[in-house]
Image (cartoon, rainbow, N blue to C red; front, side):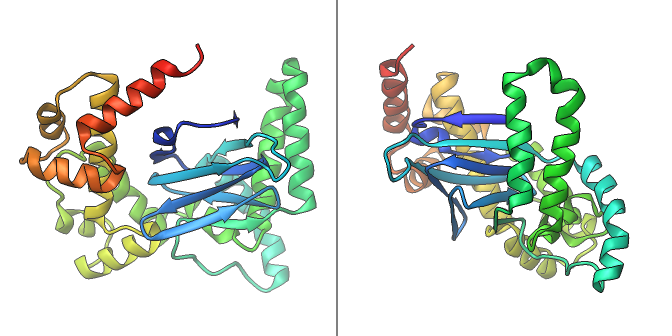
Length: 276
């Protein structure tokens, strides 16, 4: 579990987000993935089931209270064990939920899930109880999410034969080998799909084509190389797989609003000006 409070530098909100449940306690947030933007606040929660390059934007509460949120990393093994507990209830209710096509969504927060989060957050005041109680509260949070109207999105994390699970394998390959040429035919074969079907399902799940997904990974990694490692623009471009520094600079500026060198200088100035 991780907690974030207050203002967050804009560049830090453009990142590759790991699978998670994100709950806002104060303020609001929007997440943009590809051409889709979802907004949520303390009445809702956000679920992401695959690694996704996204841009977040946070907002303070109406009364001026700073943004405050907590997130829980998704563990496929825990979700798989919970699915077994849900099987009987689903049979009684008329069957399991339909498989989703998307990998991220916003769902309404229920009283039962709120209570589970309150118990989990209460452990911050009793850290000695975390080893004994946190796993049980985490299971309850995930169980409540699985019961919700968007529970099908979570189920795909732990359902090996699902379309989303097969796409996750391709996504993991692209993340690991983002600087290499994209072997669409190989990835489609590994996902047991035709190339056209692979493109269609990938876009439905991530709001990005495979090539757009790879491009965003490359640009985010290049930004890290420029700011944290002091690489030159040309060196960063080559390291992430670009053959042309000119093309890299053009696509970087389109993504982040400034050419690489200017964007890196802006980020470093903001970092130096921030309180220690």
